[in-house]
Amino acid sequence: MIDKVREEGQYQGSTPLKVAGKMAFPPIRPARRTERIEYAVRDIVVTAEEAARRGKELLFLNIGDPIQYDFFTPRPIVEAACKAMLENLTGYSASAGVDEAIEAIRREARRAGIEPVDIFITTGASEAIDFALTALVNSGDNVLVPYPGYPLYTAILAKLEAEPNPYYLREEAGWQPDPEEIEAKVNERTRAIVLINPNNPTGAVFSREVLLAIAEIARRHRLVILSDEIYDKLVFDGDRHHSIAALAPDVPVVTFNGLSKCYLAPGFRIGWGIVSGPAEVVSDYIEAIHKLARARLSTSHPKQYAIPVALEGDQSHLPAVLEKLRRRRDLTYKMLNEIPGISCVKPRGAFYAFPRIEIPGVSDREFVRELILETGVVVVHGSGFGEVPGTAHFRVVFLPPEEVLERAYTRLAEFAERFFRRRGLTV
Image (cartoon, rainbow, N blue to C red):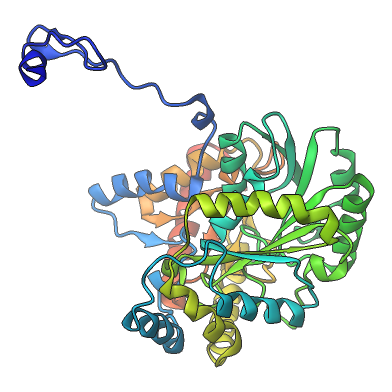
């Protein structure tokens, strides 16, 4: 009977009535919390698709996925995951992760000088970041986030109806944070300080002195530090990466890492969080994180068995990866700085550069959109990562082979000359 009533458009429960022979269903209004969510790295794909429809050859310098270029996941890591699947380890795991993987992460943390209080394994470092923020902030709270910085943090804060409280990395100082600015922005609703070190999108590696100063701010104001260290082994020129949790064992820190970048397995979606600090201070926070982990059951079970192999097995892929990236970094730095109207701070880690458009009044969104549509060179506008007001940047990923980078930067140089000339701008 109910089916017949529905067919006749007479059912007035959750199903609307027919209007002019059609079902009248008003547009679904999305939640207000989604209005501020932007993700520039993926959003730029729409413009790239338009360029492809115009017949442009696309050169992708926008996605930080090594596997899209000429890098390969180390075979032992793949074999460890396959072996687990063949052994039928394909059911749910413990919500925080399998013991073998957790213990391997614990040993790796101790090698970096971190003493873990808790470890939780997640679907990529992204989920660890989501858990850490969701378990910490309430609507109206704020979190100090670096500008420029990875846009996931601001997207999650928007979802939580909390506020990003931006502090600006200093371009003139190699994109190092300014501890004095960070402290000046702390207020009664500030809950945490986010660090991305090595930094996406600038390639900066933060100095020990700066990290110690930030730890002191967290200590003084009783803030949690959320330290994203997913690129910790991708550091150039003899620089050293320092984990802030190792420098400040008395401060509550959540350190994020995973298999995506240094171990070239982004599609595995395996990451983790390491909670350190005084146990009595972080215990309730840890339980809140674990509530969230239990609610989603578990991350991918078999792929967790790749973690011990990655962290404690053959590391011979790393020198080769670093040498490739160093050459591509050097080419990027040289060619970008040869373009009139463009300047670039030398990246010290990761695989990103964040060049500046030196002409005042130029919109980076407009520059990037026209660049993609005219040349097919796909980069991301700097305002999608946050930047000092009045400045304009764009992010490039220097993962592609050198011949691809050379072609891309040559097209970029030719475009920049046309772009500035069309606007009557003097370079």
